[in-house]
Amino acid sequence: MGFLDGFKRDRNEKQVATENVQASQEDELLEDSQTADSFDIENAEVVMRDPSAGIEDRSEVRPIKTYDEKFPVKHVVGQTKIIAIINQKGGVGKSTTAINLSAALGEMGKQVLLVDLDPQGNSSSGLGIEKSAVRNCVYDVLLNDVPIEEAIIPDICEGLDVVPATINLAGAEVELVSEMARENRLKDAVGLMRGRYDYIFIDCPPSLGLLTVNALVAADKLLIPIQCEFYALEGVTKLLESMKRVKTRLNPTLDIFGVLLTMYDNRTTLSKQVVDEVRGYFGKVVFNTLIPRTVKLSEAPSFGQPITQYDPKGKGSISYIELAKEVISRG
Image (cartoon, rainbow, N blue to C red):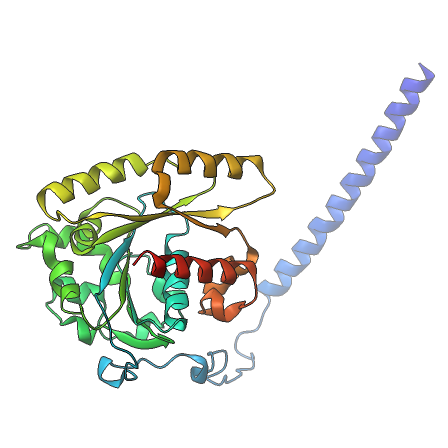
């Protein structure tokens, strides 16, 4: 009983101490509230602020050029390849691949056009494009009959031009429903750029709506990023079914250009198992290059730079350069 009595006594003392602390904190809060209530607004000092304070230096914002101001092309462009980067599952490295593969090919002397067809606009913001300064975006090309040249922002990086996306694109799915030849809008616009670029990449939204159908109709080939995680092949079956329907009815030449494994972590058995599973399913269309999961790849978009500029000697940059070489070798 002595032990229990001592235990109860200690517990009571701790409880009293806790209640005293709480009471002290309540008193302090009461004093603060009374001070706030007694604030004399009539005698308050008004401090004038500089309106420009806190606004970022506009010299750091990349100026928006027009297509007419594009640097001259230094080589003869061959047959243009239009490739849609697509996966209905989000978070697989689709926009990351669109940005960094495009930039790597541009640095290798290719002329590349990146069409941001994702309403989230990650490819646009990831390349440092100030969306509020954009005059025309891909929405205007699809629904307002604006020529695609008027939406192109040239020379974002060496050899890389971009058709940006803004928040306006979020309503395009609904608006396209009532349009004539709604599935061919992007094809008609992008087709005019054949012969001016070596590669045209389309960053698709993570869904199988009308925007994605437009990309499937406009593209020659598909590049499918798949992350090295548990649900790697989830949703890919539906994507392949959609591809077959479009190929049968609207785009007979559509085919898979390659499957890219992203977010690879060589420390985990799961990543290695996913690689084996995907290569067993798709065969030779899977790229040899594995895109690693790195902090730098995640950081680069917040600085508005492709990985080849942000961390040129890092694993992510080296991987996308190797991928660009594979893309070129596939013709």
